[in-house]
Every structure is written in structure tokens, then in C-alpha cells.
Length: 122
Image 1: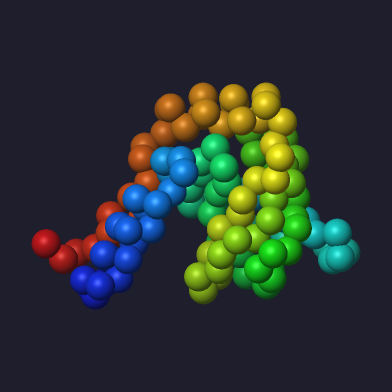
Image 2: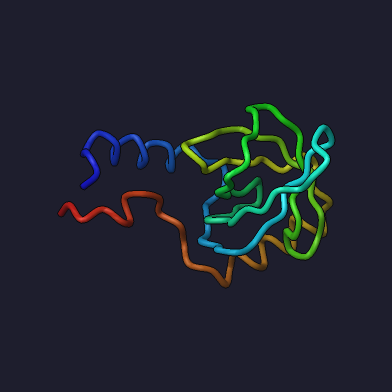
């Protein structure tokens, strides 16, 4: 069971977002310029401005990475948040075509509501 205060924080964070999140579970490869190998990850959500993904690899806040595939493209991003093994990535200057393709993709996906969606509290 998730404490009520955690649910309130999640709801407040969702309201502060610039763009709505859509559920997207997909394999992802994360590469860093200072690491020789790429890391495998799994996305949980996406928006026009970024995505969240879980990975067993460690990333630093503020670290610049490349994500692939994001609507079939390799996209530059920066690590903005970390919660356990889940990271929030913000796209850095994505091409207009990528933004348009993400927008189209999100229209066909379910909205992502965060941890409150999985709470068994009523």
C-alpha cells in the first residue's frame, strides 16, 4: 500500500508537468559519451519533452546521454531525475520531426497516471 502523502506528492508533480505523459513500455538503449558500452533499459512513459526508463546501469543527474529508439530515432537527452532504478530523461533540442512523431505516437497511447494508478487504496 502506498502512503497517502506519497500519492499527494505524485499528483502534485503530475500537475506541474509541461506535457502529459503517455504509457509506453518499450526496450531502449542508453549510451553515454564517457562509457564504452551502451546500457539496456525499459521505458515506462513518454511525453513530447522526455521519457522515463528503468535501467540497472547507474547514471548521474545532469549526465548527457543518447536514447534509441525514440520514434525510430537516436535522441540526445539529459538525466533530470532518479528514483531507485528509474530515471527521468529530458530531450535536448529534439528535431521538429521527432517532436511531431512523439505527438502522433502519444495520441494512440493510454495516459500515464503514475504510482497512484497502481495503488490499492481507495
